[in-house]
Length: 317
Image 1 (cartoon, rainbow, N blue to C red):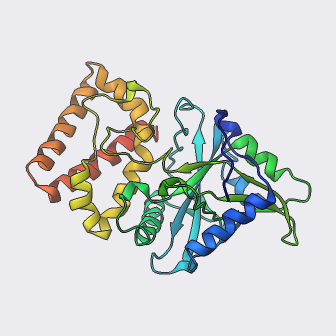
Image 2 (image 1 turned 30 degrees about the vertical axis):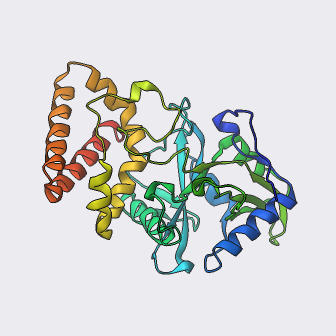
Image 3 (image 1 turned 180 degrees about the vertical axis):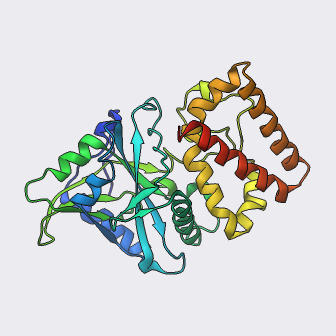
């Protein structure tokens, strides 16, 4: 089946739109055939979805990101609901909002930021086994849907929640965009009421690229994010050290999740002659020197400290 594509650029809040039942069935059956051992759908109540952004009016949409409690257990599948801001809508996908409390899951429970990165990494670890010859960055991680599209779906008469159906389109050659989930409004009996897709997949629109400075997750990112002193996760260091040890995997996912939001503030500081900017340059230089000289163990400690410090400075105040 040749699936339809949408060429018209949509505002971030409007990403996602209705699709035919035929296309919905095709995508759902495609995932089931390609990944027969995986759960095909996750249910989220309307209450849970609304709760994920009830305390903020600066939401452009939600990233439904894939996780596992245990990478070896397909039944431990979990979805993380990550609200995105309206301050970075010039990007392909607005940046996630990073808060101390962490994120809500499909089960309606909150998980800490640290646990969020672990869940995301468990998914990447599990699905990397399906693509042993492909780049780590290409693994499907989730999808973004605009807030107006999401609310329109939830406002469907009789809707009590959504079935998030994992979809797969085998007519697409790029593995990072074969992932095409189907958002299905359902009533209290579980009957489907309406179906949405044409959301924005992660990757490619919110994925890490090789190699880039902080914030370079999209092809269309502004040149203002390319400061030469930005913190850069060297891909050799990532692949040949960090990802060789599962304990380091959550750190990689943390970096790729928060770095675009950090970069919105960091690059302005680096462009200034402030004391703060000078201090950041020295930290980044120390990290780069450790990587370049092969002191990966120490580089990992410094890298983690820098990222967490920047989260404290730029995201939590």
